Length: 161
Image (cartoon, rainbow, N blue to C red; front, top):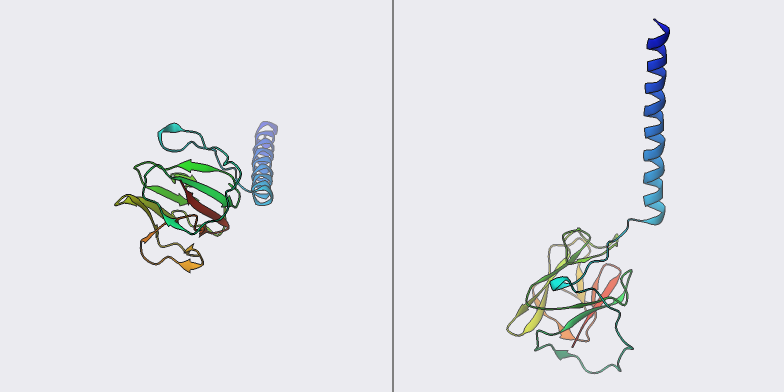
């Protein structure tokens, strides 16, 4: 074998070896630090905002207005709020969801919130770990009252005016 051929083979092997090392480091980094979740605005391009000081707990009421806000009370997005309009909201780990969760206990398309008859309803989209409304598992579309915790994976949400 000529010296040139041997040098090209050595350089090719070195390049493949570096590619393997960089891929292994990238995988270890994502396992240690998790994936980044992009901050996205709500419907109409509005940015998510932090809620003001929590109000005193009252008896749950049913939301009758479409101008409600979905507030994340627990989880990686705690403090984030999303103004609800006329369009349904999907929650899950998939990038095409309205609310993207970085949570191992949430499915890709976990749950859907949608307006019906002037109120907001929630339905589980066949998730593995389930969707819970005030400690009750959601098995069919259920009306979402104001102030009642909705748990999806490690995150908790509340519907507020």
